[in-house]
Image 1 (cartoon, helix red, strand yellow):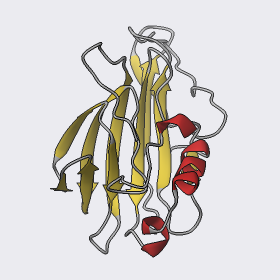
Image 2: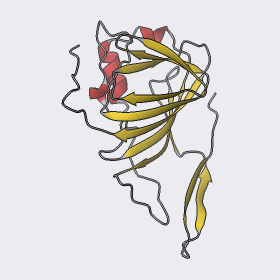
Image 3: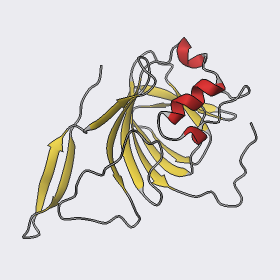
Length: 190
């Protein structure tokens, strides 16, 4: 049920005129966790801030799916979350850690016996999430909220999970910015 979208990359020709470099769906797509898992569409990432702007930007190279952005960089991705089934709700902490390991960030998993959702995780990033289609529940340590198409979430390194309880696909765009916790942020003990 993947619905493709265009990724349009701009740049400059030898005269400095703005041109389209590429116009096609993203080349890196990955289903995480097998059937019933989310599909990640890796759109682009930068390696530094400020981002270097090239006349003819090349596809950033990366081996496999990596959850956070590069150190001092950014990442944009689209994720399609299928409706959540029993297989997700029955995950153990070890199962959740394995899923995050397949996304290149096993240490992000914060799943534990008392966790409000088995796929709870936390990264040192500021994430802007925009619901493009459908709805999804944002699960935090002590509360949750339903976000719908058009809603935007600004995630500030919080422990969270995404639960699609709607019965339909939810598509979200995420812009991830590498960050660092300040001394006032306490990491909860699981």
